[in-house]
Amino acid sequence: MTTEQPGGDISPSTKLELAPEVIVKSMGDDEGGVLLRRDSGEMFTANDTTIFFLNELDGSKQVGDIAASMADVFEVTTAELESDLVELARELLSQNLVRVA
Image (tube, rainbow, N blue to C red; front, side, top):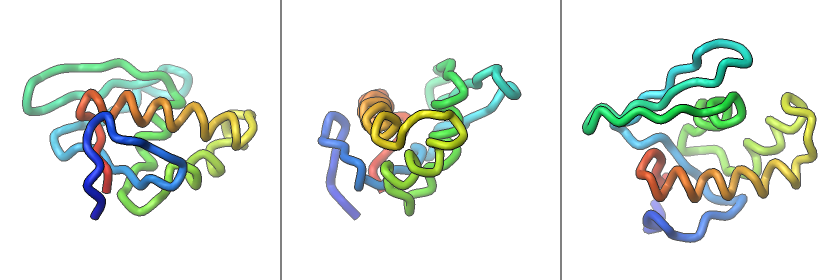
């Protein structure tokens, strides 16, 4: 287990998982979804790309591997998606919605 903390450096090789108090719910195809923090009741809305990414976070997959699997689905290059997902992961980590596995 790594010791990265919120604000720590996220890279394509980082493995993430949802924070235990976070629930992700898709609202349907092309409808995005919501994240709910059970401990505080805070709710966040998210687009389809973010919901797809969050549903892939199982603590064993690297961000780069998830980007590669998502590239065909969202019709973007793996490199572009990888860069976007690293930034997204940093934001989610800073909000304590995910944690480094």
